[in-house]
Image (cartoon, rainbow, N blue to C red; front, top):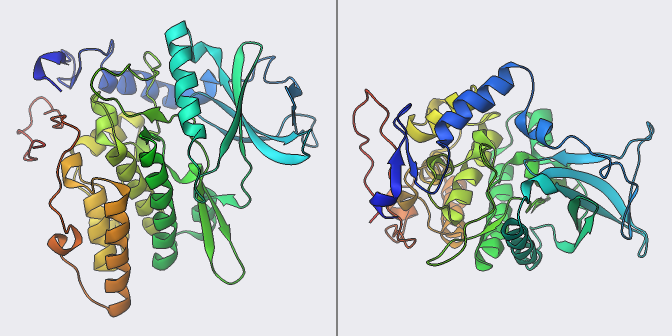
Length: 377
């Protein structure tokens, strides 16, 4: 990105894209943090059910209601609510996500949403829940997704505490394989986190993991491409698992999803996310605070090194695509099985190359030393 297209916030000194109306740092500090202190969540408030949400039918999909007569919610996100439903024509269960029209305020945003929804529907992989229908009901758009058996990864972690290392690495492997399919379609998920990963544990000890929500997926921006759908004044993603780029206002690519997968793997191994606090504090830590590896306890050294690479603040120093991570995972599991240590040089067989053409550097906070991280090549 051309440096001339970037501006510096006069309040917090954060550098961000000149195309953005608000500084993302200040939005989180003054908006999200204050909402959290008041006991409310921005995403929850933004997607309160409307009369359309309470409608029983969405074309040939019927919402399944609980004992209290209300639709059964499977999850809430930045752009909508996901319900359990049934395809009345085929008699099979589905997950139905309703997207409020408030986030598609003009024709260009609606066209981008439709284009990106079609791209998400093109992803077909055993580790990604399929999207197979897009429709509109009143003021809201909706899309039907594959209903995945099992439990969300965050619930599994909550129930189990720290996951066994081999199980955590196997779940990470399957998610990385799913991200490879997302990457193949030139998409970025933007919200990889434990609650967006379903895990089905079988009696024999095997596990199946699936990415279940492509609701924030966007096409990777290239030269001359249109900007992605944005919500003015609202951060898109989940702070605990978002990459530094998502806070800095620069274009994101698949390396951002790999960072989020690293934060998810950290939670599997440590029982909590790598950084904790108010949304503003978490954002600052993702941008500037080194990892505290001691939180991982007795995690083997190869797995720790894998996390260090995934959670590099400079995307040029991470794995550059899911295929590189999958290769590294095989080496990590082999080293653990053999009781060996592993070096960063051996883990990164090919020096990282920034193929995006974007020069990225974390903003230097006022009153602190200049960041030692190198610019992307």
